[in-house]
Image (cartoon, rainbow, N blue to C red; front, side, top):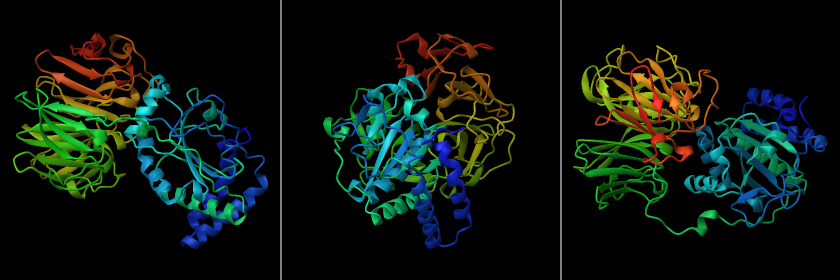
Length: 510
């Protein structure tokens, strides 16, 4: 039986509203249904009241701790249960930013991020601070490190939104991403309903943004880096500053492309803009960029000093198959890119770690075909491996395999003829054959494809080795080693546990 004041106790009540909304036509009908629902729900406010947040929790973006039944009494409160590594949680943030731009505490609305960690690394306040800066979160955030509030409300997945009334009473819950219309509808009607009843508190809450306490920095959360063939230039994705830096190996900056504000604009280096760029790949004075929060692949031509868009439409896509021409194909949160081969033509494919749909995609830079595929025209953007389900599933058939937020890509040596994938949410390294598309396990993770909680910091071979949310991989042809950025274990390049030796049948991590 669901506990009183829990999301599970609300779900049965809300289900009838969801059915009615599915059959409603015009917006006025939907608004009336929500207002009627709130009227009926008001008689049950006592049994749907949530418990108070525990004392002593760590807070960000506030001058003092907030209390659901204290200084938030009289507010409509949106609780965002999130963990900062989760791509679905990241997808939700633009919706919350838009909601904050429309309503504020003086309208009776407060948004609170309830950070409920998946990985031990995510329980640390300093790491949450970094995430608050990285994603420009300006609403209050509480560190529910032991998931106490998560468990009391019987939350089951990230992200989950819970909307509370002025008495800390449950009104609505929205599980997962992609509910912007309902979020705005439910919030607007809740504000109207309680304002008409004179129950809203329109006073300001004590906000103090964490970002305002920090000095400016040349780099802000650089996400990825690559080096050109000559070894003389580095390309840095300065993610938090929304720009790309081309730097000499001695540190001298050659070009700054985009930034410091986020946006989507093609053109010259000074007028172009990006939104949290991640992966970068360079060849022949051309750089390709995984423009993550724009859901785009961008091209930087160093000869003409121009930026153009080569894939994506600028909004998050849900298509898990693809096949259209690049600028007509919606994509979702590309996190890394690397060059590869198709149909025997070297360097003719840009491989994409498509974190948003948990897949590996391909952008054909020349006419060609993918392994065991049909010929495709130049510019095609298409799924190569991954069903789109968030799993750690290996399979000889690439479309039946599944990834969990792939975040890093690199090409193995020509003799291995494969891609290596840093599959962050399964805490594993996977390989994808460029001969037949077969997806195989390398190190980390778990044999159960549904278990995404097999993480740790253990040296060993294959499945016995444990990683924690790896974000990057790089193959060295000089040493025949695969280098792994084991991000949540904070392993440095000098630490042997960063090195994975790729030997036949065994994959030891040192």
